Length: 338
Image (cartoon, rainbow, N blue to C red):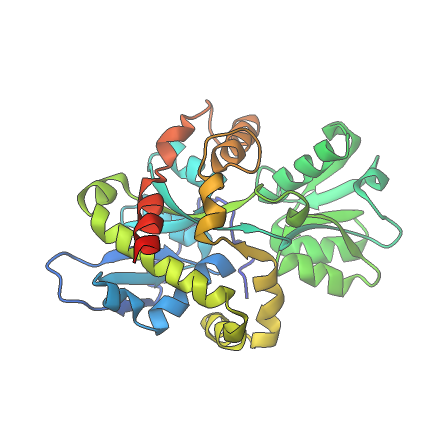
């Protein structure tokens, strides 16, 4: 299942996580394989399609995909044990501000409903939460989602009281009656819906597409030295996207992804549906610099402001340094010419 600490930044790392299993694909290259950390989010679990089908070998690039809990993957990257890692745009800023810069070269997806605010029975909208309590992990993605929803509803932050709650505990806190709603991602959000009869999502990431982008971030030194190899990785990604987007492949896609996280294809299908995996054409405008959630730069500026406000780091960062769209754009142009 999608892990209870998925997609937040915390200073935690276990020895067991550092020894997480890897899927190694061999091609006769002189360089060491590109070490890529990935974790339990559909847009990153999707790499399994390319792994299972040996597409990296076909493209002539040697990679080692190493499976982690999300937080552990970021810690491993920060420790210099990975060449790249899947992170949200906001979390990449935190790793950079705390000492390990990275460059986003591939936008996998945006959250399309997996992140949600779940309210107890009788609450139909965010406006109904005025004067009430919301359980969430303060300073992280669920908090950002709530604030964005309130902004869209014309509400002020102080109209709701937040109760700092570990995301994996939000279903139980909602069930206890200690709060009136919770903000969480799958599977915690789904568990809350199951646990509290009559509860419902009143705002989700599907209502603010682009609030959370999931991206492959690469070590700048590795990117400089092995740019052509990273382009091959991106090319495999778009082969994966084409495969997943073909409805005739849905059953096989679900079987591959579900097997990686040890659930049934039927259980996994809602997770995939709540993640909008981006095609090459869809991603091009997202790479353009603009304000707002439709641009990865605009979205990341919102995350940067949020991170500073909630003291993840002290000063606003130079967002441009965290992205390089040129590899993706070159790959898409080359693939179109084939």
